Length: 493
Image (tube, rainbow, N blue to C red):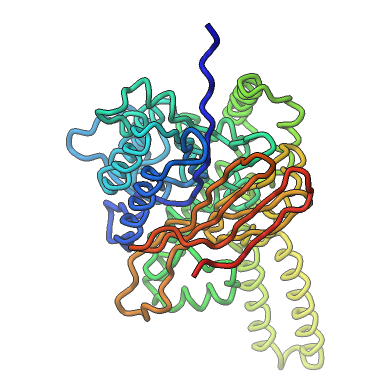
């Protein structure tokens, strides 16, 4: 008897949903948009009812499906924890320990029942799902959390075994040889990258998943400071933050400073710990899982290491990087030089003619130091580097399409023999009633459909329109006999 044929698959891909991002037991937070969940559930239902060109659909969620970092919840009555919360977790919500994350997942599922119900129905219809880890859901690393996902997606029409066979988890990337390479993209963002993708654990406590520098600032500062947004920081400079902070008033400024101080102290401790015994154990666990992953996927270790070498070093890996990331080095230069100038002004009568020379010297030193420390802080927006690295990845893992998320901005760009696609996002807050609704941020609601058809590969980028369905944005066709992809960027009417 011949072995059963593996089903062929058409791919449905999206990323950056951030379920649970507005769960906050310690204070008010901006609620997640009601319409975005409704649209996401409708989109899943739509494709559940549409027959794919292949045997079945495989949904690939390219990271940040559940916002384990952003949510701030406490254990409720009846919740059992085996990992005692740290003082910071008591103040800011449960962290990245396995049992903490299991509670977070249950709370997110209860907060977004329609999305999880449609996802379960999608699997029950015979389709498959792959979750790729992003920087906000690295906590899917834990086996018990993966088991809980399986349980949430089990319904009366699909057995536990069937769900386990159709739903899997990728710690780094998804690849279909020749067709598509998909990863979240945070490893090309120095603010969000993790040093060890196969063991994203904290060197200060390997029982907990490591929070990236950006996610630490989000958890401890951004979502604790009224009026501070998660986005738009790529356009802010030091003076912008100083003037904005002063606008909070004396008490607000003091609180903001305290949050920054606590976050920086914690991040510096983590950076130092990488050189200690716990850091060595995390590195060893990464290497063990790396080798096991290569064997399981049938990949050469050298090719995987070449891909790892494309990742950027995390900015929080060193104490110097921590200070540069939040511009404390630039702030220190600003304060010291401002004090020096004030002192010169107060002493100008004693210095006489030397006051002018001293002032020029201070200004020149200020300019030199400002330029020098500014170079230590990389670009906040990783989009251009992600696109550049996509070309390298297409050579290491041959594919017509290299797909990422993370930036929340949908993009398509031809590469040498491939196409780079960014998926946009499904993360959206309810608009502020005091703001102009026409200017309120609206998520792209984009998704990608990928097929292999005879002599060509096709990728179709759609935006979901409420009450209408998928709205065509780009048709990306790559003939297998031609190195140049064809891009049809005409939007459907």
